Length: 580
Image 1 (cartoon, rainbow, N blue to C red):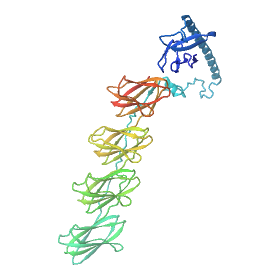
Image 2 (image 1 turned 90 degrees about the vertical axis):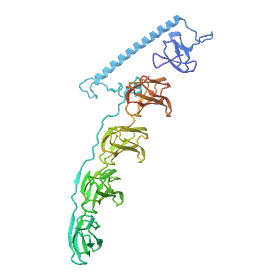
Image 3 (image 1 turned 30 degrees about the vertical axis):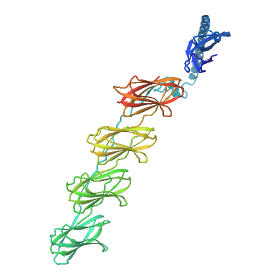
Image 4 (image 1 turned 135 degrees about the vertical axis):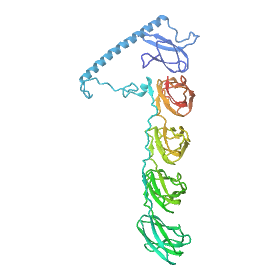
């Protein structure tokens, strides 16, 4: 005997072949079991009090006398149909009466409480808020809405390109060094002449002989205020000298010049150290070498942890300088004993630490510009897909950070790069391990997909200058959010970059097959469609899915789940994916 279904139009029976539960239309006379595919006949009979009984039997061509459900005659079938129509008519009439009573009661309640608690004292009609995307009232179960079929619009990647400010330019010029000059005239052998000097700044002092004839010589001895010898030159000739260091400002020294060969006139010159210059907020410092063995000293406090560079520029072709960078403990960080225009020193410095750069004369005397490259603040890519940035000095390394929104892949692209410029792009995990590197190498557009990212982990991207100085656009394409879908849904989405993967979480709401169909692709674009089970096993694959192509997932059941992926195959395009 049939059981009553939740729907007034259906009856529930069991298949006599496999025992499967069947939802059947009582108006039909034949049916097919969806589980075992057995053909069935729906048999009706009327008992006392005009009660209709429904039974089913297997439709066999050869029936026997033992058939428990003999065929009814046409007159009985006509009586059954009339009875069904009468029952349905009575049900409809009863529903109309009940609905009228409910509406009348609601009207009475609304009249009694009009404007109370609604914030609408004018008595105007209050419209219930409705979800503009699904057309359902707030609070409705999304699964109920999904069963009615939804159109899901997945937004494309953000196209806004914010521009990162370049490093603020600040230039300073330093005056020439002070050189004190003391004339000397020897009139007798063993004669000694003494000069007192006060050194204004800490650093290196150079005492040297000038304008002396080539066949003459003198001895130089230097003493501090305590009378202790700090340096000397035993056999001084024209152009020769001695360097000594001072630790503080305003220290006094005595310079003793003693005749050793010949009697003549000459001068003793003392090159004084310049004040120490802070480079922390400078980009260009114009300075010069005024005497042999001169040493100019600079300090810098790193504002950000990262790459800093110090390059001489605007030097005479045959001029050379030495460069040594020290940390706060005096240990050498990096050095270059033969620096010239375009060739200096660079190193990774730690934020908050102060470093000392000593620049010494090596070959020739003249002016130079010191170009200071500072680390920019790291750019957080959480709110951006694209940024426009620039490299302004050699070996500049710009840093960008992002937190992975999902496990899987991330596409990094460099575009709008000048063809004469080159950059190296690297990604690092939170432990500082290099995940991968690629370069532009004089190409305007290039990129790489980095795999194996972990959701919630923060990663760093470094763009390091290799050749040329110019601008570029960096794009970080994280996977789009996973979209929940079911039968009847229509998804409007897009493939915008190479190796992009759009992921959909499919949960079945019914028993049977579901067909996925693609449309809306432009030109010669194509995608790949892949379906996986919850174990990650591939169930279906179509590696070249084009307009009009379909793929069917068989034998789904309510609550069964699969992951559907649309992957870039050829070109970029919008597309429409339907589930039927």
